[in-house]
Length: 98
Ligand code: FES
Figure 1 (cartoon, rainbow, N blue to C red):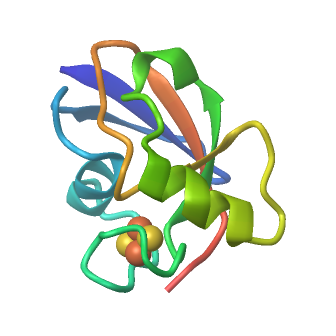
Figure 2 (cartoon, rainbow, N blue to C red):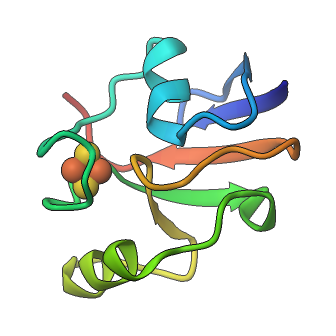
């Protein structure tokens, strides 16, 4: 288990390591947008990782290519459907709302 803090609300949840950030956010009831069955096709689940970035799975080519095509990307950017949680606590900022 790890701790997931969701911004801007600042709410904190326990999340299962080894699950995608998207699954953990949905399990926590967070209003995160998804489109395209979580295959990094649309970039709708773009989030900023404020803490715990190194504890997440590494960015793969598909995610990197999609991030390159999005507006507003920073060094904190990840696609929630592609990032898998490790044991380190993560603080994530939701950028889109459903
Ligand atoms: S859900 Fe479509 S890019 Fe993540």
